[in-house]
Image (cartoon, rainbow, N blue to C red):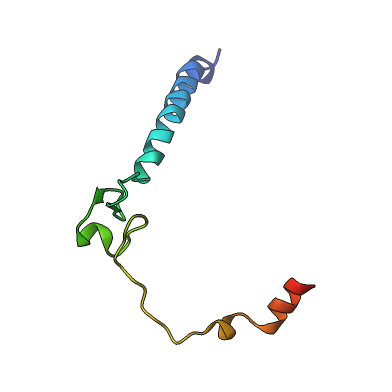
Length: 86
């Protein structure tokens, strides 16, 4: 038997353990904060500007995007609307 065949059970076990831990790591990025808390860009829940400002993906975030001089008619053309109607 080759060395790879002897290590196969270990490789499979490591894969199973990594697969079991992965959902916990992924869910750690989703803050699941209370309704009055912000989720920071790093995945932590609080209510200060550091958490509710720039990069806040969820919660009562306070960061606002900078207004631009772009209007809908500059982005969405008549051909787009005509394509929807057809």
